[in-house]
Image 1: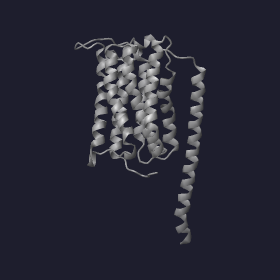
Image 2: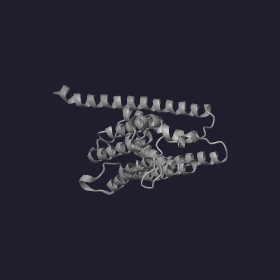
Image 3: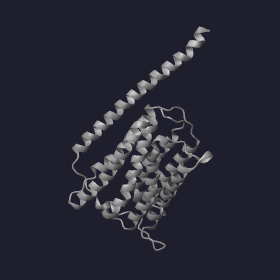
Image 4: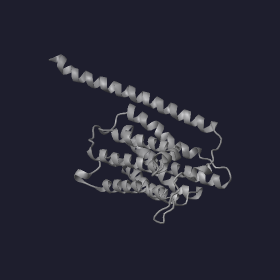
Length: 277
């Protein structure tokens, strides 16, 4: 009987030890990524915006809309962002299972997504560095909101809350810095690149090595996968357009992350809390 009574206690201690080891390894990896990103940042000279970026393969107009599909393909972003904002207010069965202590991080995520639908649509009407600002600012809001959410759910609620406002300010500053450096004659996208890609590099580490407050982390994996796929479609914009004929890689790029965010909202509705730290 004594052995049976001791066994659960031993299992709990083993699980706690494994958790500590995993989180220590995860912290080391995140610190290593941070150092590598910092070194790479100073190794590269300022990176200006390539004017060829604005030359998308699909320039077809329709319904009096220039670059019609590149504009209209942003509607899913607007729809899913609004859906997320409405769901944040829902109660009962439709309520999202979120950390209310960092409510504004989820608000930033969905508000940023909705604004991407508007800002990116506006940019694609008249592609230029001037209009690209209104595409990138909402993207940083969504990026930084998601990053704060992940930190809250997997590392520390308090840390996630503390980081949200500085993250949002850093994201905004990275876009404004790029724009002003373009005006001054030597654009610098390095800060914006860090804001966009540092979370993408570190979020998988948090998903693997840290324990979440909730069950079912698949929503984050799907969102990351759709974002990576979107970047690939963006890179091969003209090749995809040539192969499919009716739609370009850049238009598909808009749709995929919106689908990933929609899946995340569905996961938020059905997951269950497993631990509060």
